[in-house]
Image (cartoon, rainbow, N blue to C red; front, top):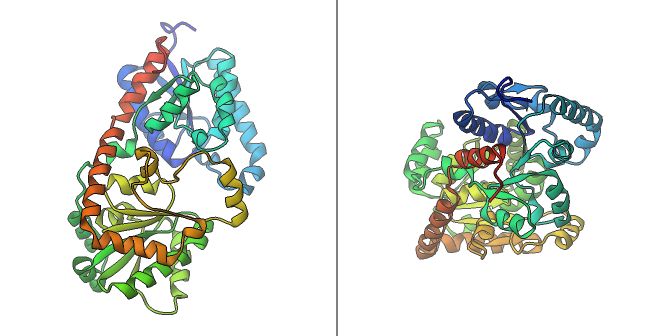
Length: 398
C-alpha cells in the first residue's frame, strides 16, 4: 500500500477505561508526528473524542472475573475475528494492543505473522507469574512498551524488543503533594460539620479495602478490625474510606452498619486520590493503588489475603519477592506487606501506629518515594509515540 496515495493507518485495540486513557494520550502524541494518521480499531470515549474510528463499543471487551469471559467467549471471538480480517485487509502501518493481553496477544500474533508491525502497550505480569507466556509474547510483538523499569529489564533478559516509557500516573500526579489542599477539598465536598472538624484536628487514616465485590467482602471486615484496634490505642484518629462505585458504596455501608460499636469511620463516594493525598497513613489492598499512594508520598501498609487454596496455588506460581509496587520498584521492603496469615488486625494496626509515632520513618520514606516518582516520570505519551514512530520508520526497540 503506497503511503503517497493512502493515509497512514494505525490500529489500536483497548479493552478497559485505563487503556482508553492511555490510548487518547498516545493518539495525541502520534498525531504530532503523523498529522494525517487514521486511528481505528476499538477505543473508548476519550479516544473517540480524539477522532478514533471504533469498530465495536469498547465496553464489549471490558469483562472481568472467571465466569463472565466464558459466557461472553463466542462474542469476543467474533469481535477478534472481525478485527483480524479488517486489519489484514487495510494493512495498518502498525497495530497497537493496549493492555487486555488475553484478547490482544492472539490478534497481534496473527497480524505479525502476516507482516504487520505490532506493539503491545502495558506489560502483562509475566515477570511475576506464568513466565512461560514470554514465548508467545516474543512471537506476537515487534515491540513491548512497559510502564515500569523492572519490566523492561525482564524483556531484555528474554531478548524481546522493549522500550520503557514511564508511567502516566507519574506524569499526572505532581512531584510535591499538597495534603492541606486535599483536606480543604474534602471539607468543601462534604456537608458533614463533624467530619470537617475531625479532618482539621485528627490524624487521617485512609482505608482502601479494594474495588471489587469479592475483594471488599474479604478485606473490609479485616480493615474495620484494624480501625477498632488503632482507635482503642490512640484517640486522635479519623478513618476515611473511598467507594469505587455505587455498588461498592452500598456494600461498604452494609458492612459498616454491622459494626458492634461506633467508630470514627467516614465512607465517601469516590475521591480516592484526595483521600490518599490527605492521609497521614494509607492501608490498602494490594493493587495499582499502591503506586498511587507512593506517588502521593504517603506512608502505606499493603495487605493481601485470598482463600487458602488460591494462595497455595499462587505461591507456587509467583516468582517475585514482593507484591506491592513500591517494594518491587525499590527492589527492597520499603513499606510493610501483610500477606495471608500475617494479615492480622494487631500486626497491621501496630505498623500503622508505628508510622504515626515515628516521624523520622515517614520522612525517610518520602525521600525514597520522590526518587521513585522521578524514575517513573518520563513523559510516557511522548516516549511511547517516539518508540512507535521508530518502529513504523524501520527502527527497533531499545
